[in-house]
Image (cartoon, rainbow, N blue to C red):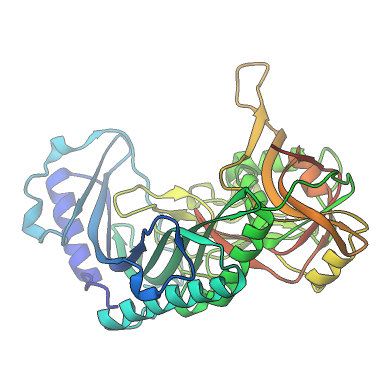
Length: 472
């Protein structure tokens, strides 16, 4: 699938010159993005996975994306414009004048020594027929494999997106950058009933290429989760260790994001330890915009600032904060490219790209088999709780994040000395954010990423000091 062509940097600079001339702005920036996505949707309410693939009604559509965003202004006045379609020619900015600027301010990052336009990622070229055929083959293969494992499963809804995009940016400060990305995502809803018990499973997975999604692995995950969701509740729940899968570990890490970005997050993270380490020496939490093989990988962020790996937690202690270029040098820390746009119409915001807990050499299997008496939790319950709450401030200010607590509804297994004693179709894992980090006892070697705002990754984790209780 080939993205629509983008204007060159010279065209952007001519447009920037025209904007400055008409508005009197001291600075300006143009961001242009183009791409397309092929979407395959299957909406056969409660169709058995064993149905003939030819009987499944699939709707195929192509979503074209092409638009631009302009920021211009100075210390006291600024404007923001965004529109779909191609970038206007230099004489197409006639509607702008000095009155177009409104009260506000605009600061733009300066070009850094040694930076240059980043070449677009290899997005490849595939014919539309090939894309559609590959997508349908993937979905049919997934349903076939799931039917072999759990024939009573029924497909509620399925959607597969596969596409490519590219962007170019230029500003009057000399910053220029290009980027490109391929992305495939699959979102699936399944249901099943066994012995009068009803269960539901929803999965959302992403990869830089359709072939990397893995139909067999996803089918295995769905069957495992539906089996647990339709199991009888256990007679008791042990109060010992809790091992969490990479999928649930990703959800837990996502709850910590307010502590892991910006100056305020850094201050709160340092308070979280209360004079003790945040976690064990093997705990490393990293955000890396240029992670090899990451589907968000880019040499520059959406303001043209170079990305790099930032060790937010290093050896169980606070490492360095994730700072945008505006805070470069704060408390002696260097900034990283970490401002991204949720779409071409959006302003860039501070956010994570590939946020993850680094894996260790300890095998995930040894962690699971080493549980003396506890639970192994596989995934969150998507119609249940998954949030963090923070105590209200006594002085009317923001809540104290260091006192935050979390709740996550999950499915899993009850385990004793490596043997499965029963299934837990719905339990609630609770505790404080401090307990969550300081309770890490082991970190596995099976790091994987799930889509969130950006990508969040975690391996299997062994946790202590948290509470597990049955729900429903």
